[in-house]
Length: 127
Image (tube, rainbow, N blue to C red; front, side, top):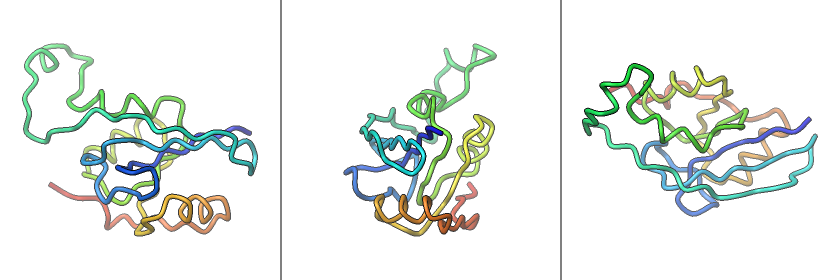
């Protein structure tokens, strides 16, 4: 089974402590237990208090929606932390979300593959 796992990052090695501040997603594709592809995808920056009147006029538009576009096709997101609205939105997109204190992408991926990656809901930032 092919599975895509996304990590918010600035450097491709370290998991960003806050999803909204990361510049990229490191997306790893697993086929079964084997890593078959990895790529860095630029992430549209999210600004907490920006008003986008054109977006708000359209009923299907969602503030920050473009930030989640690189997650299309992913099944899992492993992050260091995120705001509650982002957490809810990503879960609504159908992704399994892990919030971890592990900072290294390789180590977090190994823990995930071994079924040992913990999810810490305290890493959801309530605004």
